[in-house]
Amino acid sequence: QGQWRQWLAWQQMRMSPTDIADVTGHTYTYLMNGQHPAGNWTGLFRPGERVRLRFINASAMTYFNLRIPGLPMTVVQADGQDVQPVETDELQIAVAETYDVIVTPLEDRAYTVFAESMDRSGYAAGTLAPRLGMAAAVPALRQRPLRTMADMGMDHAGHGAGAATAGMDHAAMGHGARDHSRAADPHAGHAMGAVAPVDHAAMGHAPAADPHAGHPGMDRMPPAPGPRSARTGIERAAPGPVLARHDGDTHGVGNQAVAMVQRDRTAEPGTGLGEVEHRVLVYADLLARTPARDARPPMRELELHLTGHMARYMWSFDGQKFSEVHGPIVFHYGERLRLVLVNDTMMEHPIHLHGMFFELDNGAGAFRPRKHTVSVKPAERLTLLVTADEPGRWAFHCHLLYHMHMGMFRVVEVA
Image (tube, rainbow, N blue to C red; front, side, top):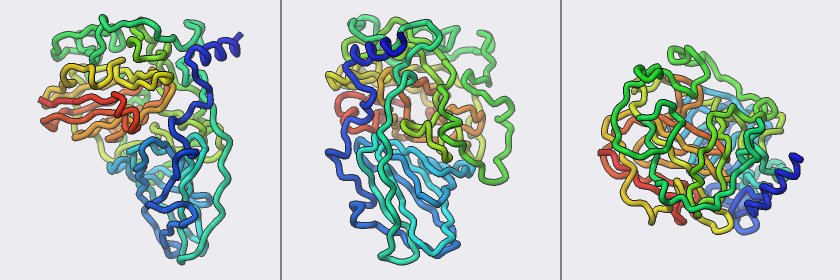
């Protein structure tokens, strides 16, 4: 019965579990610093020295899984912001993300820098070597990954049949950014209205408490004395806890489905990395080097749903593409707010904010990592904290180029 329900859900969405990327290696040629793998881009090192590499995903539509076989990587920065060192063997990098890693090649030989597309349809590759002209073996492409029930927002607890198809037009219900500053439950209701600061203590919400934080005492935790180590993909493969369930708003005809259950997926490896036996970096591994400069609790909460329709190739926030939106999302200058992103689609979306950094709520307390781009997994409920300290109008969008151009774009105004 479970397999039948899965099959039926896929058919209703007119999708396949192999729908990983919009554009694949059958169309693209993947490059490293502008060179085809056959061009063998080479970075030189002296055996035994520490080498810092900055990985920048400058592609238009492709997530990459990065690894250097035989050479562990110590991650020291994410999106240009220092993090406590964490050692890993592989990491997934979304479009527009950057990671700085330190490697220490000890042997007098070449190492392949391998960037495999998330859908396993192609790769970019280069070489680290003591001398020009050297090369190492290039790994074979792994078996293509499949989407899972967790990606579909399926309810495993018997509270629903799975991803709900969106066949109704709910334009009259309103699809702006949802303001929860007046809601007793931080995940309840979607009413728009005037924004006002809230006394969370009077509502039963401790001001400094974060409903998504799972590590009491970490606000006062000093930085780790040495590099930590990421866990293996197998250890992180289980879906995260359910944080909320979707209400009746299916976001209109521009949205194909909704995530009936929304999970915290910050401790899960990226697509295709859940079964690997080596260490894989996940968002939960990232801790800032220093505590957040703004220790205030959020004054209000905004919730945005990432929406789309694969068959019609429509992409939007809250079911409205940019051309249908009237006015910007307003951040009040100087305020501290919680921004909740709910991915109602079957794809990862790299969400990018210009002008300010997010603080990614990954359970690290005051050591939340700062990022300008966050990858939101399918059916994920991702929480960010923002201090609105840069006046002006700023772009806020999905960094998958075609998604942005199709309408997954908003303007944030800090005033």
